[in-house]
Amino acid sequence: MSTILLLEDDANLNETVTEFLTEQGHDVTSVYDGYEAQEKLYESKYDLLLLDVNTPGINGFEVLKEARGEDVVAPAIFITSLDSVDDLEKGFDSGCDDYIRKPFVLKELQIRVETLLKRGFFHAKKEVITLSDTMVYDIKNNELIVDDKSVSLGKKESILLKLFLKSEGEVLAHERIYKHLWDFDEEPSDTALRTYIKNLRKMIGKERIVSIKKQGYKFTTK
View 1: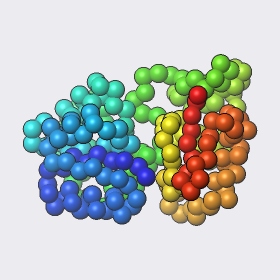
View 2 (view 1 turned 180 degrees about the horizontal axis):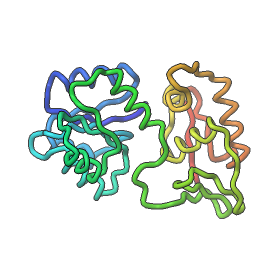
View 3 (view 1 turned 45 degrees about the horizontal axis):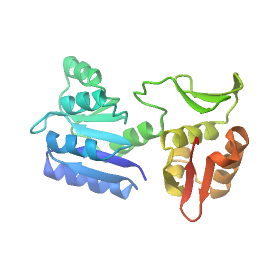
């Protein structure tokens, strides 16, 4: 289950978006002004930020700009009726990853949210993640390196490894993994998932991916 922070001061739109994303399997925390959003960002870690721009207290641009200064790396989508190039530039300068303009259909929002959640690392300050003395993951090039040699990963294994690396120490439910590994037109398979897990374990070590009975999997670099 992905966690999403929604900042939207329009009560009807806030409720509609919250209900829709919850039905899609996401855990949504909704707030109505910028100060509330800041409080939630300090209290919890989110997988994605969905921020209206013109909000009471502090606008979405400033909320995100400050969050990036505090090393909040979650991808962010601005919800806005603004459409000038200057506003677009200001939004990306503050650290956003995508825009959706009002009015929008919920299906478009779903596509944008799911696309960002499936991508690699966002706003990371370090270039590599160290897995061991002989193994690192190159964030910039999405590459696993063992003994100074690049290891070839299948598409699904690559997506799965990035998900684990971004969620170290968390128990990832099967449903959340399914959402990351399979596209809308693909049928998730528990048998296939076990195969991808097995393949990854051969590359990075069996002890790094722990099976949690009836819950999912947990990844550790320890």
